[in-house]
Image (cartoon, helix red, strand yellow):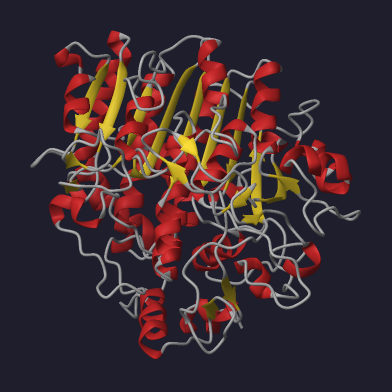
Length: 592
């Protein structure tokens, strides 16, 4: 266990904010080289915290953010803000939106053609060109070409990766905060800093906002709209039945806003329900978005690594693997969910989970029945414990048992059964972090692959949700009851930072290069539940995984041979109307 992870796990005992961890850890490591002396840490930590004055709101002994969330749900409205378009209805909207989302890059500034973010934003936006827009969408969506556009397209994320590989970059990292739009990030930043410190732009308050990467970091915005919504498919035959679907994608900045901090003229437009006179453009789902990020194409909602007509496409991971890179995915939600799936698998339907997992693990699947894909070198995520006898969205080859990974496939890929993967599975009475790290070290030493399979089956197999205070005790969102985790749920599962560390252990043991996608999937689940307490916790737990990557680059590489892209696949629509209310009264009062 690293010092960072120790404090991250236990900071709720001292009400310590995440951004305070970094100077504290630097101070502590300067006086102690033994990061495993947990007993010493326990005794020293409180003394350190009290000495340097980082205890926040200790006197009240209450979790202010969870109180705000609880009140918003019980009252049905909140002065802080609301989900959707109606200020009088706190939970009016539970799905995605067509908002512009932020992009944070590291190792890109001044890095040459195609790698530098400036090649895609500002005057170089593809949305200024009718022909460029036609090339992306296959047509020119209504009111989407804009002579003043400064935003990039989601497909440009794949362009950057390919350009970086062509330029000789050895390490390419993508961190996707599922559903984390600009406002979700700002909620976390305000909470972390205990103050409202920005109202536009990049801002500060999380590691990925604050980190400079030796002056190579950049910031921009991007359109996430899909090729189309409303496509129907045949899972068993892997065919698209109505190419083009029912609603096309596009982005009208006049209706939706030129930036996510600018109030839209028509908020309903962002929800695909425009007012009279406004165009209708589809908002993306995670499958289409991840396919754009990983393959560089627009496709229909529900597509995993296939184009608008169901045609298989090559992803960056496929291409780099052929070039000798080690490739992997990590997620806090089930391993065959849309984001990790679209990094590698091919399927016309995102909920054909078991077949998607087969592609990811190099097994025969409905999409590749005769010649399987080579398989990822690292697959770590959730899905454990979700057991069912039937799953209608999946095909006729569905096996009873685990919804996301067939029990027979888990056995088949194991080294113990002659497969290529050391498997680390949630085990009763065993610490998840230790089980995973042990398997990672064995895989690295033996030149094998790694499969980590964790989660809480009662809650669809995702990892326990971290809340804003760093604890794992969610309060209610729209769901009838909040999730409740046992001590075993906490101890037997690693967190996303642990998973990222394990992935790096294995991938970095290969010589050619690394491609790694990490998904903080719980941000999306929190926002669907209209739960900003969980949203803030999800941003911070994902931020810890980002820091694992930046720490690894600093220790093992540099920002001339590595790049990192942090972004979201789509946004939601939380309208933060009174951000100052997120600051606890005692904290706000101390600033005057």
